[in-house]
Image 1 (tube, one colour):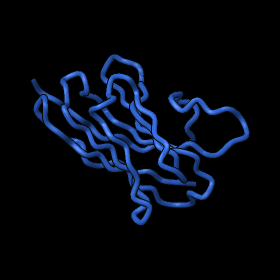
Image 2: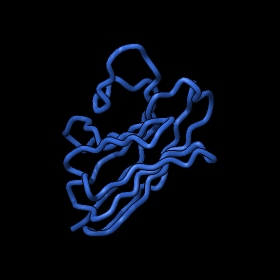
Image 3: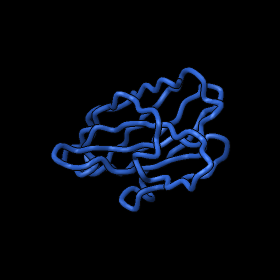
Image 4: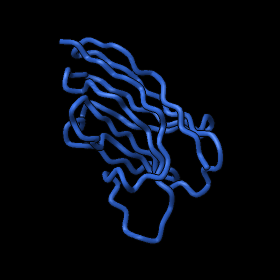
Length: 127
């Protein structure tokens, strides 16, 4: 099994930037994709971005397109979420998650597609 540890959260001003990291340990050979989700207080968890484990294919929620960039560093077994032009509505706990390979159709934005989750890192954006 894979263990995921997020880091890089914190406080930023509106228009500022943060870079989140998600370090994976354990067996990742059966991984299909890594994703970022977020959950604000009183709101449901929502998809943010995802990247294929073995390619550069990426997906983004409409709300973050053009502002956030997901990337990977294979040498470090780490996935990043570069968050630029932050808005107060980006305030949430951000979770990274791993999707294992499967024979079925994958809906990359569905949280229940993912098998392993990190503990989350708080991002707070002030106006």
